[in-house]
Length: 135
Length: 111
Image (cartoon, rainbow over all chains, first blue to last red; front, side, top):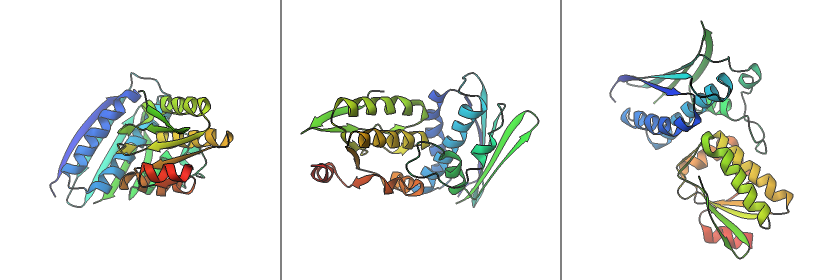
């Protein structure tokens, strides 16, 4: 497996999610991830960026989201930053999947389930989410 | 995004797109509800082309299931990829939807 790093940026517009999905899918494949890991890690990033748009920027386009991607021989590290409001405590407290009949509340539990670590901090005026996954 | 839809012996068969993300999930939820309420509440969703979906899409499918069951109907799924199946298992959606390998099996079961 090769090592590398790249930075992706996007506007806080849900219409940009499809492009991010394709780009992260490509980064995973380039890093040597198999189909399952590629799907899962791409979904983790999409859920995290969706949280930035939905909760951080309250669905308002025109704000910056940054994704820093690094991969080493055995690990992928992703840092996602936005300048919106912090993720609500009730979202972060959902560490297990809601009942299957629930219409929402799956995003953060998905992120936790399909990463080896997920930590979110408020640094200055930024929300900084750090994710790692061994591969 | 317009969902492809056809009726087969009173059962609405709807083909989902190759990807379903937050940007389109609300629209998909509205279209599925309109199809269900315009029919008899029996729907089969074709996921053959669907390579990627997120939690918003899961919510849209659960919403359609609730709409169907309020009408005394149901929503069955077929053509699920291994990756989407893993998502359904993680979220336990496989416990509330009946999932089939192909359209013929789903149609037989719904009849």
